[in-house]
Image (cartoon, rainbow, N blue to C red; front, side, top):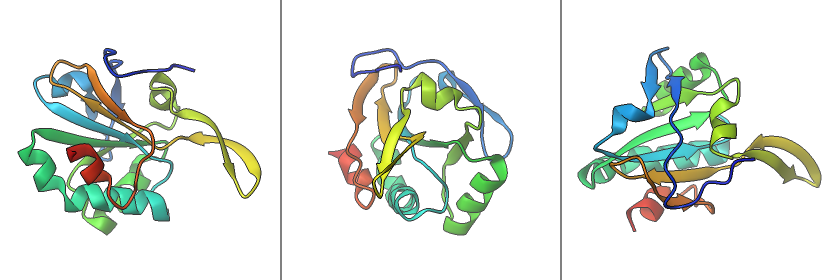
Length: 150
């Protein structure tokens, strides 16, 4: 598994958003990017995290951040999630698990004593030059924007 750390160049990627449009990391050169990986649309923790980022979106924009969410859900799931919670940013589709593997966020998880493979919740703060400035491993889903802004 890839292990990225602060100071590394963020891996280049291209993925489709909820509308089937291609989005590239290069599209964000000159801007700060919050790239957050989350396990699944419409689940309690992922909804709390996405809504917290949405509720604080203007504060993030004022500090120069753009926001992109990534999960292994498909376009329809992302579109429904965005519409249901009025999310103001794109969600990228990673059905083939290319991005979760590229960023090293796909691995073994445990729930109720059982092990399974899945997306590990993690956020990468990428600077204007495409360098990983910070990685947030212990995401507080209800106060994630505050973790980013402080």
